[in-house]
Structures are given as structure tokens and as C-alpha cells.
Figure 1 (spheres, one colour):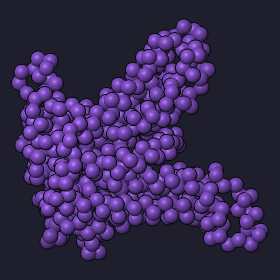
Figure 2 (cartoon, rainbow over the protein chains, first blue to last red):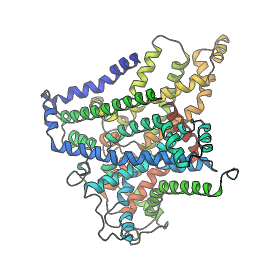
Figure 3 (cartoon, rainbow over the protein chains, first blue to last red):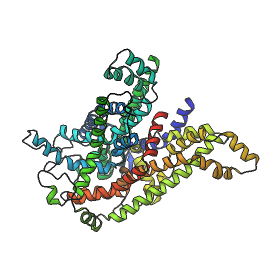
Figure 4 (cartoon, chains in turn cyan, green):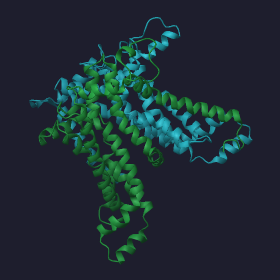
Length: 285
Length: 279
């Protein structure tokens, strides 16, 4: 394993090192390098209210999206593993959202969740909600709408990955459980979930990397001229959006590089947690 | 098949669950198609329309007639960018995958690790260096800036290498060598035909990824060189109230991939599920 990490260190080093280098300068998009500031950008970032706001949004949307997504994908994988006619048709059906571009997803769901004439508000009106919800206006509602977009696009994809590892589970395990009188629900919890655990962790780390970099869905959910701000008070601006806003609207490449580096650190921390979890599961088996 | 030992209720529940899942998946796309085929006045009525209307043709005409967005050009640009990347990725990945799997040379393992390493650098982190590089090369804003960085792919090399290793027996290559075939000859007449199934899947996945790419094109491309996804975001931010126009544009931008998906669905699903197993 060690040669891998050496090579990775060398190769991963260029974008990392260059971004780190830029992050220690006052560096403007147009004027270029305006001089060394050391850790000044980092100090500014940790005191930056807007950054922490974006950070909370990113983590909040990530949790709100990922937990239901993993649960539904696991159940869906189990369903797809059943005996059925037209296997390819059903699999294609659940993968269809993943073929749709993120931009299209953002636009379509932006209209589905529109305040006036949106189909969700219309349906909610029928079950007794008088006041239409302004989905973009509040933190909770915008997080929920964005999480639904993410889940719509990725749940079927993850279900297929889980299905692949489900098919590697020996059938005898289920037969033995059935003879012992275990219900389908019990079989799911005592055989399926433990056997899938490594794949669930793999899927969740991929979801983490994607979730921490979330950008397009909230951008197009907001629409309008200043979409990059993520709502009137930044209630759904993610860290990646803040990065782009600082780099291109604010023209502060140095500061944006600082954000990129901090973002990378968060991804690295989550990846390390994942590796530790994987190790533990292996040692338990 | 299903009638063997399964009870009827169980298979009913299964199909009910599957139908529900597929409806949830297809619903938003159906919504898009309905909105794209209606007049704005119909969309804004309550209850919202739930069936297709007859305005699809005229809405599509309005999308292409829109001077601010140049949608036809954007479609062509996307087709060019995605095809170029697909062809290059398939060719370079097949060549490199074959070399890494079957040829013996010094530094082979280090090169393989190098390739895997490139798969692990998150895109966001490279944005600023990439933008600076494109500006230096003088192609920031142009189509080259969204094509060049994606002509090779670590994932593709890794995938083709894995496939070549199990699909091509060493004896076959040795036999061809004994007959006096050059390495290039061996690649074109033995290796590439054997790699074709994997190359097709790689090509499909690459094409879809490039066609759908948003963040980098959105940041770098100027108004003269949009891809479909960038054009869509402009369409939706500029004409927020014209929903049927926006939805017609989204439909046109989505349809090519849906067609590819319907034709090659089996291969795409196979590729994704195999990729998941290897991980």
C-alpha cells in the first residue's frame, strides 16, 4: 500500500500545493498576485459569518439528503433482488433520474416547488394546507427541496450498486433463515444489512464527497440573477457556491483557494472516518 | 416464472413496489414533458394539467428562435465536446489499459498507481489552478477549455486494464508474437476486438458524463460558446416566468441521453453494477 500513497502524494500534490500557494496570497482574478498574506485568508475565513452559514447549509442538506437516500436505496435494492419479469425494464426505470443532467433536475424541481402554481403546493393545498409554502424563502423548506432533488437523482443509482453486492450474498443464508422461521423483515435486518455493510459505507463515502461539493442543485433552485448567493439571506448557499462566488463574483482567487483547501480538509476527514469504519467492520468479521 | 412457489400476494406487492419506484423516477420527467407541451396560460391554471398538450412543436420553435441563448449552437457544441472526449477516452484508455495489463515494462505498477491517484482528486479543488491554466493557454471561455482536460480519464484506464487482464489470455498474445505480429498489429487485430464490450460501456458512461457536465463549463465558458447545460441555466435564469419555454428547452437537452439510455440501458446498467462490485 505504501507505494500507492507515495504516488498519490506526488500526483495529488500539484493542484493541492498550487491551491495552497494561492491561498496564502492576496490574489485577484484580473490583477493577479497582489502579495503574500500568509495565513491571513485562513484567519479571515474562520471569522467569516457567511462561510459558517454556507458550512451549516452544506452539512444540513447533506444529512437531510443522505440518510433517507441510503435507507430507500437499501430497501429498493432488496425489492429489485426479487424474482420478477422484465428485470432490465425495472432497473432502467429506477436509473432514469441519474441519466437526467443535474442542471435539468435543478430546473424541473425549481418549478415543481414553485410558490405559486407549483405542483407540490397545489397537492399540499388539497390535504388542508391553506397558506402556500414559499419553498425558497425558509431554511428548512429550501434544504428539504434540495435534498429531494439530490435523492431523486441518486437513490436508484445507489440501489443498483447495492443490488450488485446483494447478488453476491449466498442464497443459502436466506433459505436457512426461512427454515428457522425468520420473517422477511427480520431477514432484511439480520442478513441483508450486515452483508451489505461494506458497500453501504462505500456508497455513503461517495455520497459524502458529492454532498460536501454540492453546487448545481441549489444554484438552479434559486435561479434569477444573483442565484450564486443561495437565496435572499443565503439560506441555501453551500460552501462550493460560496467558493465560486468569492472567486468569480468577488474576484478573490486567494480567498477562494482558502475555501477550496478547507473544503478538501473536510472531505479528507470524512474519508479517514470511512477508512476507520471499514477497518472495524473487517475486524469484527 | 413467478408462479412457481411464490404466493400471489407477495409477487403483487413486489410489482406494486416496483411500479411505485418507477413512477417516482419518471414523474418529474413526465411533468417536464407535460409543461413543455402546454401554453403558459394552461400551466398556470389550477389544477395543473396532468396530460400532454399540443404545444410542444411551437414551444420548441420558440426555444430555437431565442436569440439570447443560441440553443441550436449549444446542442452542437455539447455534441462536439462529448463526442471528442468519448472517442479520445476510449482510444487512450484501451491503449493504456492493454499496456498496463499485458505488456511488461519497467515502472508499470508505479504508472498504474499514478493513474488511480488521479481518480481521487476532487474537482472543486482543481478549479482555480485549472482556470489559471486555461487563461495562460488563452483558451478560457472557449470550447477547448472544457474538452482538453477530459481527453484522458484515470477511471477509463483503470476500467480497461481490469477488463483486459481477464478477457485476453497471455497465450493469444504470445502466439501472435511467434507469428511475427508487431505490438500495434496485436492491439488492433486481437486486443481491441476483445475489449469492445468494455470499450462500449466506457464510451457510453463518458458521453453521458460529458453531456451532463455543469460546474466547470458554467464557470469557464463565455456567452459565445455555451454547452446545452449552460444554455439551460441561462434560459431558466433569464425567463423565469416563461415556464413552457424553459421546460421545452430542458426536454430537448435531456432527450438525447434518454434515447441513448433506452437503446443501451442493459450495457449501462451492467457497467454501473460491475463498477460497484469492484469497489
